[in-house]
Length: 266
Image (cartoon, rainbow, N blue to C red):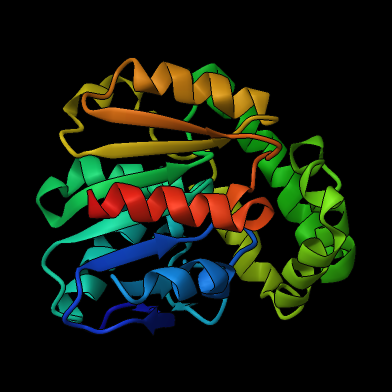
């Protein structure tokens, strides 16, 4: 039976080098990592998939195929198709939540783990229900607004206040999002948002991998989340990047790249 997933991905670096998978955040795509992997490709074989609902990846069949558990198993099959039996992983925001799920459910497939501005999900069902309702409302905006209008509204959130202080980088980011599939993006939010994903907080003690949590100093919400996660994960390191907010790898690419490179090589 043919897979409903047709992953589009970018790659950089020699296949003989240690592989590392980079998972982008919501509204993003594989190209979000281009500046980061350009500096890492001499040491690592960098693989950057477009996640379901994003970029050029195609997902057929039921909307359930956008759920985190199905996306995770599809990514493992994708790695199998590339002959990658074990790799390091770096994920940002939504990609970090997915990365944590992958590490917990397929622990033998991953080595070192970098989670940027990520969480272990929402702890209670009551809070998740509120988030699902909110995500449904946002998904309706994705469908009804033009993609430019939605992206402007999305990046006007307080979460991205510091990113707006880098207008050239924000402009480049928005340019990459002009061809977004609105229906796919809406499905991604509704099916793999934090309201739908299972809470992973009680499983954090199962993480046996060397783990690096990267957060921006001005992203106070995720600084607190990283601190709480660090108390539950063995062998974890927390790196707080000064003068940065939620999207560290866009706001402070040099600092982010240096942190990742040093962590993966050591």
